[in-house]
Image (tube, rainbow, N blue to C red; front, top):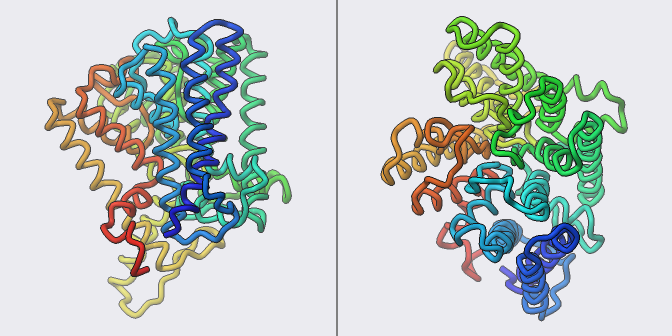
Length: 482
């Protein structure tokens, strides 16, 4: 493993992450707020750039799989720590709470430890939204898209940061692909902001909710989230953008070349829409027949929360923790499944659920016909045995880690329901859970140990576990025996 190449790449990523702070710094100068909270992290990132890049390692040097993994993991840890500083230096949060808020934003989880958001200055509200927007598509993907030094050596890093068993690569060069994905991401964000502003939101609200919906992060600038606005029209607008962001962004690039029919013909996206619609109907059924709401209100809120949960955005227009048990169970299942591979949504991903069901079907066929040759295909794409095994392994790891986190929460004093909800909400990067940490609550009441576990769970969920687990293998950091 070439330490100098890792340091050089990390130096550049930290520098660009630091330069992003110029935007909230400018907002602090214009609208008021702590200047040192953004200026000092910016200066630290510049200092780290010169220190880590002192050996002038070439950025286009070939990277081994271990170097790519190390850079991906270290980049996410380093940027998370860098973005902890504004919260800490401003005096709003303690060191541990600052770390929770930073990781929650970058991973698109959307859980918060800030009790009164309305007291934060504009610069900090924008900074929170910016962190989840950067982490939504991926800090490495955005880095490759924007900066010309990045070359084919970044391909594996982009793949490690992407979600799902495969990511649509619509263009042959990784930089062209990253630029296309970023263009779609930015365009959808600007469109969402514009529509929300035209609808009647003020500028700060439209920017925050536009960035939150497209990144499927879920940060709000009001404690009541979308319920603050009491508007069915707003809910419909946000449903549209949350669903769009739950599709594989690669199909939008393909649609630009081959026409919009590509989107609706995508099997994974169609299954996602079907699961979301089925979840909405089940939630509405539970709320109507158990007497919680009238029919129209039940249907509207059911579809909003189904889209919000399946996209793992987890905006809330009502306190669903007060709904029937069946409705809460469906919400839990929806954010566990999540969106499509290659989207900004969290969860297991729909493509993996499809493959798991195909594995189940194949086992039944093999039981009846032991000599049969079974092929795993989704539409016209055939998945290799290696991909299928990775899917099965990922499902096992996801469930095992969720069980481990739940045990840790229970050991730290949380009750059974709260612990299960927290474990799956953080592993799926969904944010709000149930009970004491439901939609109307924050993570403030979590004890220190539980907050550390929540941070680990959010990172494992965003980097899809295997990337992070690899760095704990004893031989990973050895210089020899590769």
